[in-house]
Image 1 (cartoon, one colour):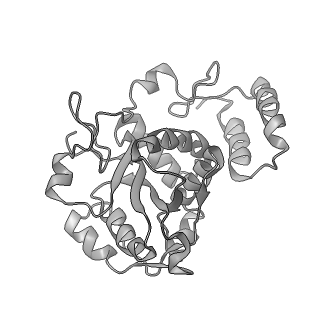
Image 2: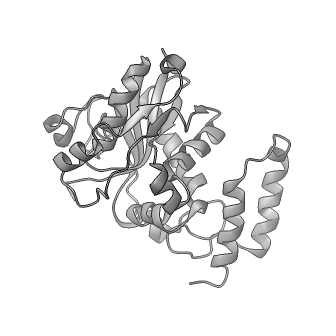
Length: 266
């Protein structure tokens, strides 16, 4: 571990956790440059010092598979060759999706997997701003207008243990960077579920059924495009339950967006 790693993480935590007033938008770049003189920017993947504004070193960059246009329009899994618009992958053909469109910023493998796990389990909130930027770029594939970002909720018992909801953190920073609306209270987890990491798709669906509900007026976002935000999409069971509940809000559309998509072709 490089000697600048922990000080730089502390600085990034401070910048990531707090909203700056509008006046700070001018001063913030200068502040960041001044900090970089003492604590050079580090690669998010390996911790090596970086030059410039890149967030990953060349070695880590080549180990991240970012999702592009040649991807499934329902989940973001990468497809071979050039594909036509609205082309679905085998997984989405086998398991019909109830949302309208979906994508991801990257695949859940190699450095992409490491970044997600650090964000989720190692308090690496310094990863949130760059990850939110990648997700904003991916959201362009959803063809939504003035969307409302809805993070996948955590049950209060899980939130107490983890101390933060990584999906809400991503949605909040996406809203900040893109000038979008977001609502971390509209969709809530009303009952806890066991860890779903090693469950089958069917077991995940059963465990999640009936665990979410809307909070507040159901028609708050009637006629709006909603984008459900999560860190990882595996089977899609979490997005399915979120979408099922959100349909009661009578939105114009519901799309899903994850930081990383588990690809079963790997």
